[in-house]
Image (tube, rainbow, N blue to C red; front, side, top):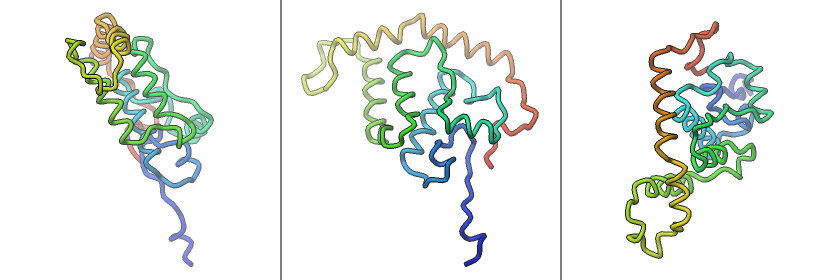
Length: 169
């Protein structure tokens, strides 16, 4: 058998590649969920994960040993919790795509519900849970997030020496 046909090639932007895939395991739905957690990180922080580091073997090792991007202090706890769940080092502990969709839908619905009395019993969301969630996504947190994004928009992110920030290999 030709050796080149047995060599696996890995494509993707390093921080978005799940640790188990970096270690040579097969790409699975759980690996996609890990990558989605990194997208959540970029959305809340306004910066690519590990933007301040070289995307090299040292970062790959750090990811495999459990390092994840820093979560901004203004991140609402329910959002941070879901993001960390997507980053779980054990792939089978991560939510499935269906479960993640359901959780994101629940989060969205909790944000847009104004009249809590309009909830039916079969909705599955507790009124207490909704109130706590709405509190977590308060105006102060939103203002901090918007201020951070505005700051990033006016101060460009310094380019790395390797210029490989957003390229896949």
